[in-house]
Image (cartoon, rainbow, N blue to C red; front, top):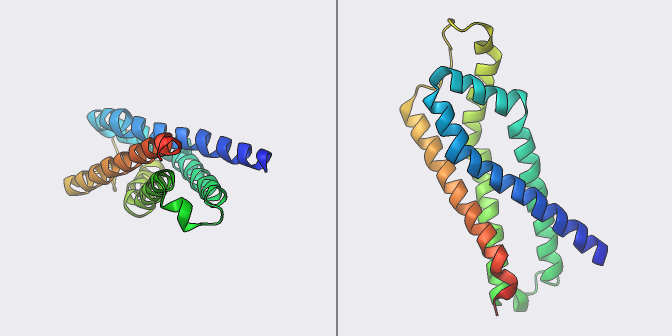
Length: 171
C-alpha cells in the first residue's frame, strides 16, 4: 500500500502543480498579453492552445490530479467513513477536492467555447495576415464572461491547493 500511496501522491501533486500553475500563468499573464497584441495575440493563443495542445495537456493534468486525489481521499477516509470526513482534515480535503472538481467543470463547460473559437482561428486565420478572421474573438460580452469564469476557476484552484496544503495539520 505504501507504493500505491507514493505513486498516487506523486501523480496528484505534480499534475496538480502543473494544472494550477499553468492556469494562473495563462489567466494573469498570457491571456492579457495576447489580448493586448490583438489579432497577433489571438493567433499566438490559437497556436499555443490548439497546435501545441495546451488545452489537451491541461485536461489530462486536471484529470490525473482529480482521479489520483479521489483515490487518495478514498484511502485516507477508510472508504468514505463519516468519522474521518467530519474531522478538520477531512473537511479541508473535502472542500479542496470539491473546489478542484468545480474548477474542472468550469473549464469543460464555460471555458471550452473559447478553445473552440481558437480552433477556428487555427483552421482559418493562419492562411494570410490580411484575410479577415471569420470567427475572430470580438464579442466583448463573450470575452468578459470568459474572463469572469477564468478568475472563478483560479480562485477555486488556489483555494483547493491551500485547503489541501494545511489539511493534515487541522484537528
